[in-house]
Length: 125
Image (tube, rainbow, N blue to C red; front, side, top):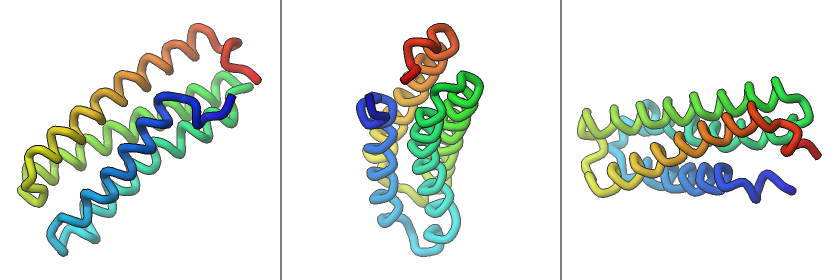
């Protein structure tokens, strides 16, 4: 099985692309501030899933990278909320859609993490 078949990676990929595109509607002054931060944190979510999956033979490493991914997802939520609260992101529909998807991804990451903690042997190559 490939990491690309993981639902959490697919959702993280979709979100990183949507967030990347969203940052281009932000004011110019945000391009080097929050926009850059939210792009990085959203891409880190998916990258850590990939790296953890690549180390899945080693339970502690797998778990560590899933925790990094969950933490980056939380960071992405915080950046999104900051953009909306400061009115740099004015489109409430975009904000709500992204926020809901990030919350869903957080839940799915947490569930996947719990499954790895419980049933690690099922995820080994």
